[in-house]
Length: 99
Length: 508
Image 1 (cartoon, rainbow over the protein chains, first blue to last red):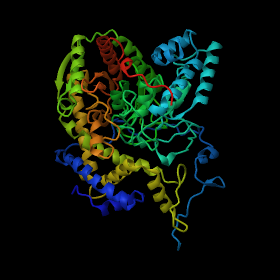
Image 2 (cartoon, chains in turn brown, blue):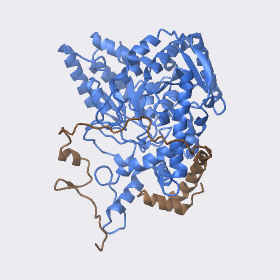
Image 3 (cartoon, one colour):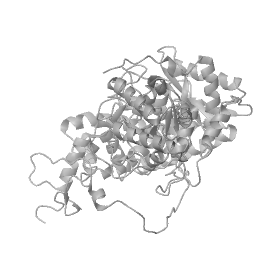
Image 4 (spheres, one colour):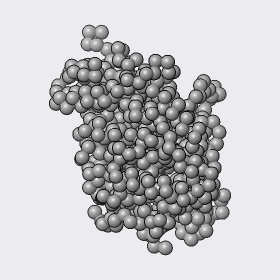
């Protein structure tokens, strides 16, 4: 199960929105297989009745006052944008051609 | 004092001389900028040197002092900052092409606190891309070189901060530590580095790698300096919901108390699973020497066992990629950072632009971990990998609790080896990951840990590090015991370890 095929890596890269060239796939797939094989040891640990830890701190429900406070101006928020139009982030088309 | 002598003084001494009017912040800051000019061509600790801004901040500090304004203890002492913390108007790349040229519109809380303390920022230090690595070789802007041997790695991901401090290009620096990125570079460069208790230092403006593990902390040339810098950046921040309530403990006081080198009644636990096999003989030998010094100082040394630590590395390499794959989804070419249009595509969609941008903007190691994390979180594998890793994380927490019932602090070597040659492990991810085997457990459990120099390994003459660990929120114990051990070690060496580093050739 820790075997990971080239096609699976391509599919995962697709899910993660990364184009990978064939050369990158050739390089990454075997490396990922080795890494997965080594982390698979974790499945030997008998932990069925152990509760999971997602965070080191037991803090829950941290709230702040719902009060107006200074924040970035629109210009500051847009200052790093690749493209700006009418005080908005300008993005490539987000709908399919036929839509 | 000459300018070059200024750069070698402990930061605590610089602060005192500034307060006494014996030097100025402009003189000190200029001395470090000159040193950077002279040696950074060969060390490459900095990605960006902020000479103009640093000198302006230094001049402002001198003006405040001349006007007799009440000043904080560190006013005017310059500092370097790892390039993973946002700095308003100063480039912040995280060592990645995807953020090349980005100027953040806001300061990280750590940076805001440095500025509020009156500390000029010398520049931004090099790092593995998005803090993924143990050698700084995964920086998209080229590696940093270890000042002890320019052909070797300075550790990672914070190799830039550690090398800057070791090469006297900064009196101290800020690092961040997700699995050892402050401590392991500290160990291989002969500097002190501390990962505070998780939540002890604000993560606001720290570009997230794995947000349940990331923590910023000090990198310095002495335990006392580390304590002073830690105090300056620590304490509750309402902008970080994982910030620990309350103020930062009295760390400098603990360091000063520790410098008396009396460890009577202190119980030191040696973690059985983190010594012996797999550790370079010279690293192990310096560790054993340090244990004897602790006993000489009055400490009681016991052995403790943390059986789950043998799974810590695997746990980490599931939890970290899972969190990273989610965190790095924000680099989508839409709101900031790089945008690459795919070639040969007519009117590409946002998704196609995203794919092309992430392929171009991310390096190999980042891609590896994003894909690994996507795998660990995907349906069918989630329970077997990510869910199981979270359970083993609980076992690591329990092992620490049991160990701290028997000892006040725990110790291990920081890293299994001294600095290895650049390129040696670059294409062997698993070998690279093993550098973090001793540092990772602290991040999984959120406990504070310090690395301090333990000496030079006999076989290669390079620095080795000793790791001290304390229970959550007991960071002051690291400083008390660390300062005591430092006094005993420096006495045994006849002077600070960094005095033995080879002089760097000045000039590019």
